[in-house]
Image (cartoon, rainbow over all chains, first blue to last red; front, side):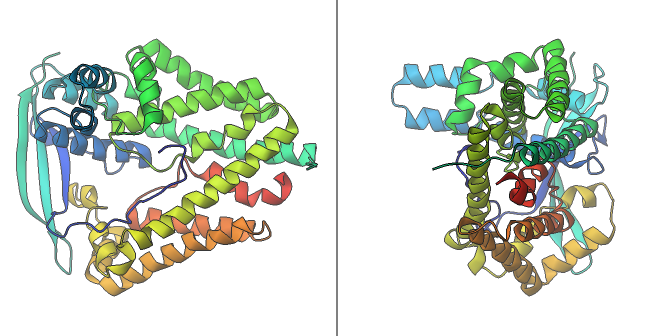
Length: 142
Length: 268
């Protein structure tokens, strides 16, 4: 609740089975980098691929759509609310073009795009990249 | 109850808060985050908060972000109204417009971001500026001061009730996700070294987590007296600087809000 003074940041115990992971968009094989950006831009560019990957994994439905579908029994009302409160189908090339625009990068037609997940583990010295998975591939069509 | 208002000190305190907010908004813009930069980003997820629902139901964020001219206008208006208010902090009409614009900006940003960013201070701090009467303005400052105290106190209480405080490895596990982009992009330095060190030293990590709990819990003093507000301010600033250093979460967006504690003696 936005107007309720409530802050549960990092108070919930994380499941130890969840691997540390980060998500990147690749354009023609090159990662779209963001770590050196100032806080809010870095946060956005880090979170956006992560959230979009969850959306894709949930069959192009976000959390609110799933919530309304389960909680509201009247299908007409739930469809009406889902239609107003969640985005219409966001396909990968369309999302990638929006992400690149936000990043301030050119959106070039016919560029090959990939959404990648990088999984890590840690030893005493550093983080170790365990594997990387290509979740989605596509072509920019502007 | 009679409320005494020292107009000059309220004016100077308001100016300081607004200047900090102006500085924060400039950082937003220069980092590349504004209405304009969110234009045409197609995805949003607003969660189950009715405050977001109202705006998205009315279609305001969607409309602004699909019209570049309007997004640019909103950015310009935020800067103009901030300057106007710094010049005259008692212009409540400008205050009300600025509150709506900053609130819309937060709603649009966190909608596109897909999760609630807890740094809401940059629009909540505008609430007192909506009021015309000095007396009401002062009561509003008092209210948001309590909001601020509850906000940090809730963080400590939820660390207790959600169990984070009872798991010694918890903070080390949280830290595993905080610097991954730096590793992925090969930017390693003292902060990433510290990150690995704390991931491998659960007890030290727990001690830091416990310290944050103590800092957040200590704001409870503010419910009984304003005498220690400046110390609370310093503690919260130190807390946020450590957050920035250890977790890469910068306090931009929250500084003007916390500064109410610093200026508490002048405002109240």
